[in-house]
Length: 551
Image 1 (cartoon, rainbow, N blue to C red):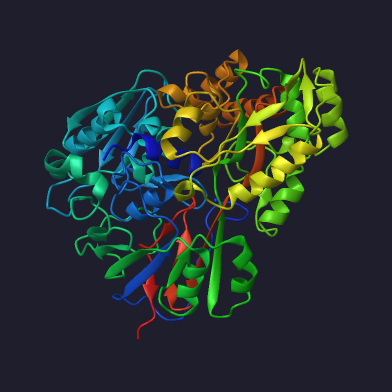
Image 2: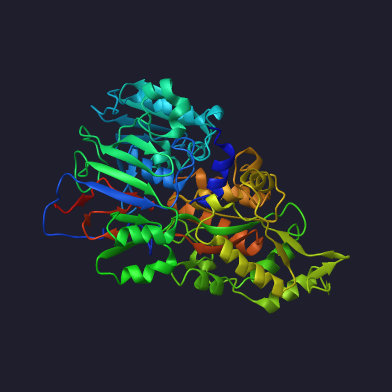
């Protein structure tokens, strides 16, 4: 399949996470403890809210794809609960002082589930494939940044180089999106990987053994697995024999399947269901604030009316975000102040409470910008033209977290200050054309990544939407370019924190290019028979250490 259009949409939705962290940040504690020892065996079923558009982990940007395929594909490094990088497929690594190359020393005796050895050549084959424009990678290629190439030093040593210093690489290398397919399956089945199933051959604790479109997929234990990440609760094969993932898009259906015992875990619990599940003694509710980009609204500053910074500041102050988020999400989600999630390194807490809702201030700013008259419908006008904002709604398959309902509250707030918000819901092709073509005024999405370099994606002028970037403000600001480049070209934590703090302040308060709305929350309801399930530091469920009560 051609992944470009729907996957770009998925990226905007999810984190585009378009698609993409534990309340309070970091890894959530497992839901269950037991005095008994882990029990090998058993089959666990988890219900998820969406079905991957593509199962090619090098191509898809969807959160659900990464979370499921995390169990099929290992990474060079892992991240522990404190955010430190730990060995996984690489036992150690050296970073060049100029941050332009990373040399990894690989484990011995790792094999893909088709029997192919994992070695330095496999790393090169996979990274070269991701970087190849023909792959049409929507996320993984961005994690490779200014990729220059991979050198096979010897079968157990590989050197990854970049054209410019690239500090975020280790975090990218920890994600499933930079995981490794068997070179054999890449040679024979590259065009089939998007469809999932047994062709998706990795080194992980489970093998992808079955897929029925619209219903479920099956992962089966890899009995030879003996190379889990440092810091995992156990070594060796996974405890579970089989992991079945059911696609149940309706929130109430997932919850009903859990409470009736049809599934062991229900992912993506709706805020409206959270309190009832927390009160249910047979269920544990896991929650994790998503790191990376909050759910933000980006203002297209390349054309009227948002080419005027005063108008941008007016709409930013004219939305009662506190009330909207509290009402739509029943107090389960936190209102956002920065484009970066609080659980992400580099978050600028000084922005909190710095731009509160102020309708009077918004009216004053619009007057200052020359929008002083009103038409018969009460909307502001200037030189006979109405003040209109175009903000398309994602098509239903890509819409999540009741963002259409939240949009209605924002629409109503802006009407109070005389701004009309037009919300059409085009098909996905038209949506992508409008958003990435710079034809809209608002673009909204979140982005899951445990790395502040997401700010480069959002605000650097080189991250052009027309070329696969995510800068939906369509702005070229020399200061933002300089600061985001500084953040990705230095390993000094203090220098990075300073640069990213300034990026957030400039984007929000100086230029009003973005309206942070809320911090997404990943949540899962878990039955009492499940032990050892937890969110990882990058807010993904991990089933490697999970075991079930013996029946």
